[in-house]
Image 1: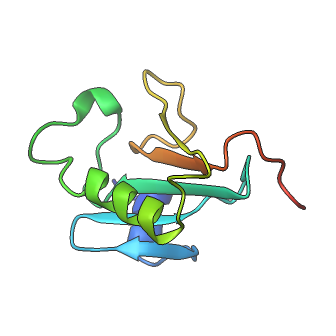
Image 2 (image 1 turned 60 degrees about the vertical axis):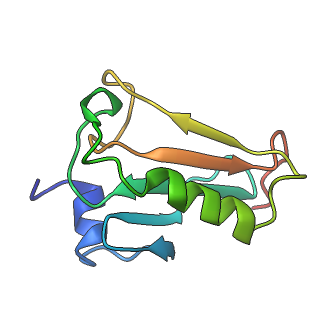
Length: 108
């Protein structure tokens, strides 16, 4: 989708703090974090909603999440993966939120 904010980040038209990228997935810092670690993991293919994910367009999301969890040593700190759907997401491009440590305040 041409005007999708996340598609524009993928095309490097909008700057983002990219933490992970491969041929199918990109992960970057959320610009409105709710915890010290708040990353977004998105497929490079434009998929509007979680409900539209399938075996071919979701590849790489779990691997990226596991890489970020390992890289930031989150197994013992507590983390959660969240996904909004059915119109509850602000950007109409499926995205997973990796948030950690759970319950930690954000330093502003």
